[in-house]
Length: 170
Image 1: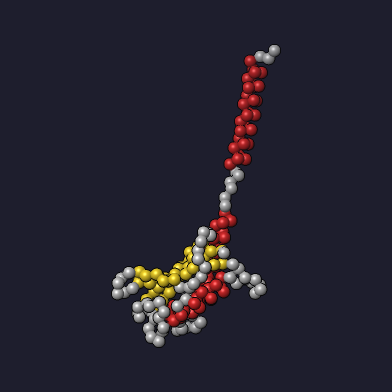
Image 2: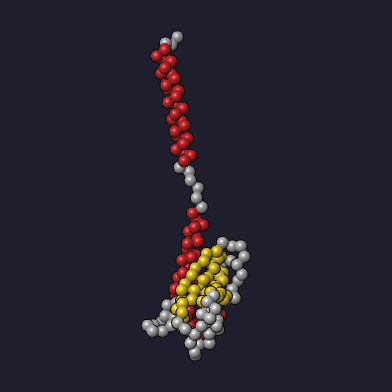
């Protein structure tokens, strides 16, 4: 027979074994974290692409000139904006490949006579359905004084308008 000291060592060994197994289970189960981080990275890349495209369109060719985006808002009504923006966002390194990004753009401005903020669609792009989309914005300084055609009916004064683009993979 085993005396009281032997029984104590046996109980201590079993308790230590259970404690080690339980600790190993906690360590293994707590370090397995599943996060859908790839989705956030894709959204950030899409948002950066949209911001870069708006920055390219809003950068003047030389000092003292208006940017392409300013001229398109003041004179074109959005047709050239749709073509240029689509070409920029769907371009790839290989000129034979194109991406399948879709967008919808809206112009926001303040009407000085009524004091209301008005919104006008800039282009006739695809309609946003249920795909995951990101929103990019750019403030653009415009001054639609004659000889500008002023297709959006902006007040003929110096003003800043908001160009907002909803961008998604189609």
